Amino acid sequence: MNQIELSQLLLAILPALIVGMVAFYFFSSYNKNEENRRNFLLHRETQKTALPLKLQAYERMTLFLERISPGKILFRVKPNSDDKEAYERLLINTIEQEFEHNLAQQIYLSTESWDYIKTAKNATIGIIRKANQQESVTDADKLREVILKNLIEKQSPTEAAIAYLKNEVKRFI
Image (tube, rainbow, N blue to C red; front, side, top):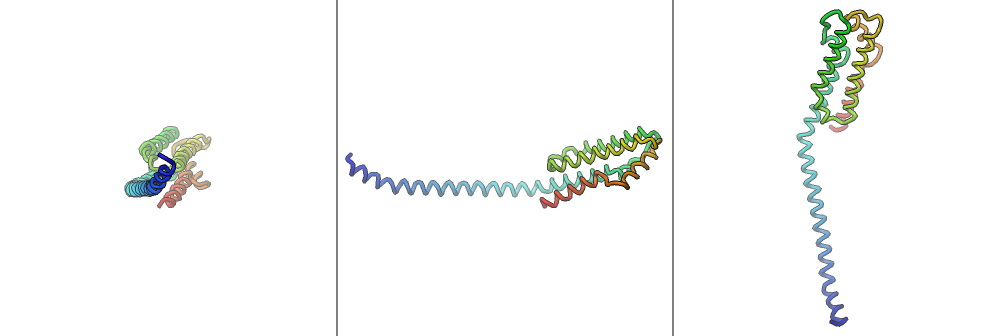
């Protein structure tokens, strides 16, 4: 094969190579777009089922926070006796049981929301314990009274957590 035949062969192959490369580019672009479209449709279909579950989790955790709010739990959980330590344990156990009942909801919540909820729960328990340590608290009724007086002076930790949950739900609706 001489040089002229080689150059003619290259000139004959060159258009085929260019057409082949352009075709490869278009097919790969088409496949990439199709993959993106399928992923979008799959994500949209998943969102149809995930969004109601996510909203339900936020609703349940808002209800949890409402139920453990110091003002509401005091009216819902009455003391069994005059023993202030027994009443403190009863209140804390009620909060812990409510929390454990809703543990699975953290799957649907953001990490920040879950942290707010845990902080509100722990702060509420702290309010109950701190109130019970006061010298003026002698029985269960006095404990209830001190906790309610503290609520009048400052905002409940559950209110801050509920406000955060409301804002987060507004962002993804």
